[in-house]
Image 1: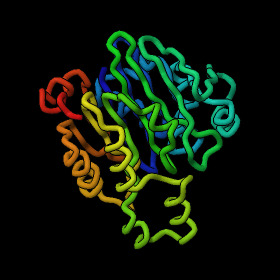
Image 2: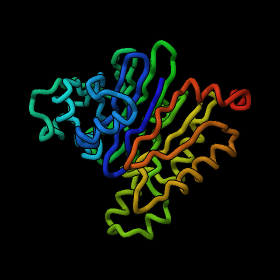
Image 3: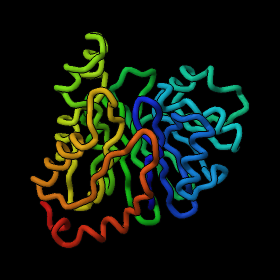
Image 4: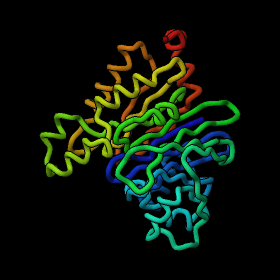
Length: 273
């Protein structure tokens, strides 16, 4: 099972999950052309994408889904609320497959477990994606106002987390946004701070957690090195020895091989907890 974040931030979000012969995009927040270019950098033909799973209706997660789906005959999975909110991006020529949070569904070798999140969107969700032949599991949770018990349950036992670390709390208050925007970002329906992401990642820590990719960083109110330091230091203090990196807006991460990353952890990580 290999995972790459094609890009993440307020300008667009998309994650590639590739296992066996199945290739899945979680969100399509870039133009169809940009998605294709980013996939090409990873050696993936856009026509080989088996499905797009959309987590919510905000444009930084949906911008290219309609054009990409029509251009490459790619099914798009979303909730009914998200479909209604994204009607202007759809022409009716796409194959739209509706899902409901709490109801897993299959896409090739992958089983997708959608779960409700708290965010100021029409019908927000996160997903955990499981490769059925190996049991490897990746959790993808950005745009989290706050983690709930359902979020923690869905993300438990993941081999990899793609987790929001949107802002530094001090930089947010010192930043250029109007007070109303600052309150929205910091609210329970907004975004996770570095500190909140560190707490959640530490709560989710278990011996099999091989990688954490921090996503959806604010360009104005965060710094990649700061986010990695806050979350990484918290995990290392708890005995974690896995891989951590920050997803950028302008370019994809490399393809992260979960089996390889688990092997690298060695016996120290496997004796954790």
